[in-house]
Length: 399
Image (cartoon, rainbow, N blue to C red; front, side, top):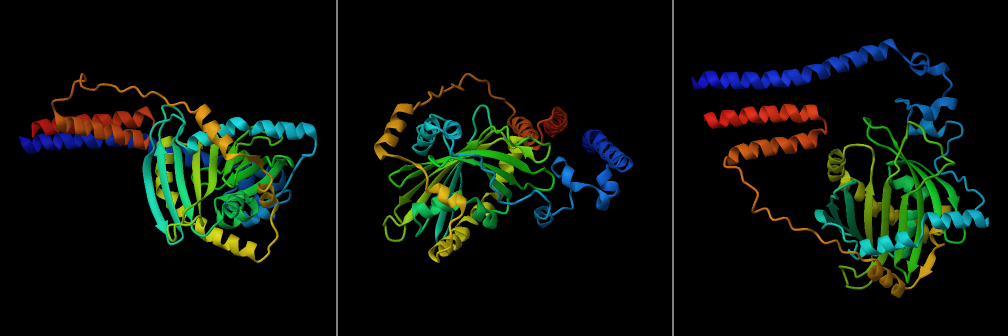
């Protein structure tokens, strides 16, 4: 009797899985057939197709970055600066990244923004660098990340220029395939830049229009970079534009772990963006690839320092990093105090909530919920997993 019931339950589970998987395979086969039957012009005759007029309308899978650089009207670090000397442009750039952004960054640096607590994700180090990372999830919006990087034997000015220098970033950050300056202000140093970041093969590349500006608070540099609108750069289907983007940081001197002197440099970074993919998938990708990206900082910084020491000329972006707004440390502290807004977190009493009597069943269904939310946000996947969990729960009670 027990053997028969086991066979029945296993058969039902397999039937549910086949019912779910079969339509997916049918859809894949149908897509392949339609794709071969209806070929676009560039797939039929790629050698004679006019790539110049349609390059940014499609993404050609076999074109590499080196081929891209040979295309007409494309440059990796071009500067298409408008008349930044005019009063109108300077006023507009000043409004794009303003004092409110500085206040917000100051609150984040001192952890006075009133948001939820940060959960530590990572603590890794090399002989000349230490990296710590935290994450938090808000009720709405993408996950937010906070990191602290400490570079030994590095000045705040060197690290500031290193992260601001788009031309040099293309040499150590292999995710950036295009960087150009759209507009800049010679008074405040405010810039609008255009980035294209490379994503894995199953995602299209992402495009960013970033406004950025630096405040100098007695050698503590508050660097604000965020997504901004820009009508002069039209949208295309590929690369996909990321509108919600925030990646700001504070660069300042700290004591070295070697001699307890102010010869090390700390970078406190706060980052979030909506890349257009499920947030659970994005969190998994960040968790898996974070250290692989971060460990490139230190070698890149050391080479950058050696080139600077040898008298290499500064790039335009590095020169722009020296044009910033001077403020006092007292002014920054006043911003932290005047804008702090601690949220009152409501403590919900869970003592009145009923607890399930069947702990194994609760664990099974809870595991199915977690798996469903991790794999997909669709109702079909959840329904299948819930159905399988219920059958395992019934099978467990029989045992």
